[in-house]
Image (cartoon, rainbow, N blue to C red; front, side, top):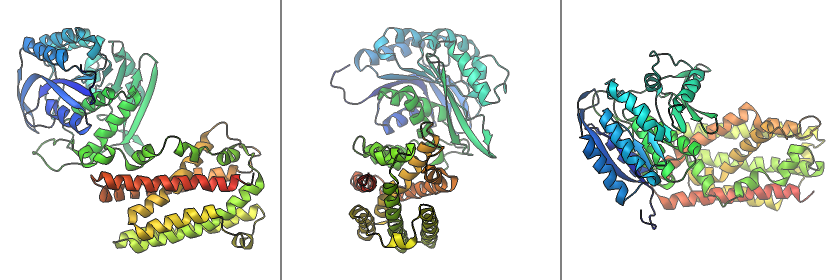
Amino acid sequence: MPDNKSIPIVMTIAGSDSGGGAGIQADIKTLHSLHVYATSVITSVTSQNTKCVDDIHDIPAEFVGKQITSVLSDIGSDAIKIGMLSSASIIKVVAQCLKEFPVHSRHVVVDPVMISTSGSRLLAADAINALVTELLPITYILTPNVPEAEILLDLVPGSIKSVKDMCEAAQRLAHFGPKVILLKGGHLPIQINGKDHVIDVIYDSEKNTYHEIKNDYIDTKNTHGTGCTLSAALAGELAKSLSVEAACESAIRYVKIAISQTIGSIGSGNGPINHFHPLKWSPYEGKPFIIAAKESLPEGLWSEFLDHSFVRGIADGTLPVESFVYYLKQDYLYLQHYARAAALAAYKSGTMESIEANAAIVLHITKESQLHLDYCAKWGVTKEDVLNTPESVFNSAYTRFVLDKGASGDMLDLKAAMLPCLLGYGEIGIKLFNDPATKREGNPYWSWICQYAAEDYQTAVLTGLAEFELLAERGISTSKTRFVEVCKTFEQATRLEVMFWEMGARLC
């Protein structure tokens, strides 16, 4: 492999899907959209559409081996995804060839393709033993769904009924040799609070640890190629040197978006998922915008906001009272301008629904400001005391920045300037509330922490983030320049949040 290689490389070993939604076709689409170079080894050619698999023609095992040797001896690979291997002879050749290239076979991801989305059996019965004895011992991550896990473990269909069963099955599967098991829960929706969820279980056999990833269940028939896509995305992220847990989370997120953002009706059966969504969202590679925006911040800036000495003083109760009282007064003045910003958002809205939503925020802030005054009263601070307090230059700088962005920019600029406040206080509230090191008994600031950890505030954060993601989808699209502009606004607002803490800390 050339030393100057600048792009991750993944080799996919799988069957061809003439319908284009799964197999080699899905793998290459997925890897391309993740900015990974894909090489391919075709093991079988299928005749299929969205309704069924009509026939399978296996490539001679010897020729499969030649494809692998040809690619790995020249191009190499950072990770290898293995999908449909329909015969014992092909499985044995694949395993033998990979053993001859150990440097390129450290991250082998195996999707044990046995049953298609349409219900067709794809793996011959005599091949299962070869899969278990030849291939799984050299596998890094195995990604079965629940029915496939039951087949591999020789269980009666329907035996795996709960997350506990999934964990036990994952541990048993690891005995076959894979270092990690990603047992997918898409075939086993779990009800939580009356709502169906998909829970995927990651079992690391070397650490003997379990990690669960929960997502909302999406009720759609267009799920063709989900298994192929997940394993390809996982191999792609491993090729970028992500950790196992991060790679699994990223791959699962990729598939979730691909299922939820359908590309329309293709065929009359189980349609394909949307492999193109990262291409549409190239500025931040298929991630939620807020994650990409936080990642764009200079190193340590977000932590400086969340873990400022002022915040730590609130957590352990050591913050001087005069500093906290001064902060409370300034925070009320900030709320006034924050309400003005929300009113400006209502003014800039283009629909009645958006006007109503932003007007509701104004009313909410108005109520919050009264609650804030009530809270101030508990500290012996009257409304007159607050209003007679000169506005700090830090406060002025922050609030005028927000209002200027709203006046000179569009709705996205305004919301990006307001976002660090909403998001940061939500994260601080949850972080301090759940941190066992936070002082509870005798901490005069415990009620302040509870206020931002409370369900109503956390719900407001989620609502605000959802609104912002929609604005980003409409306002950024594929524009790298616009993405950078909005991130810069988010960064400056974050810096001003840090200065707001500094304002109070300077009285210490």
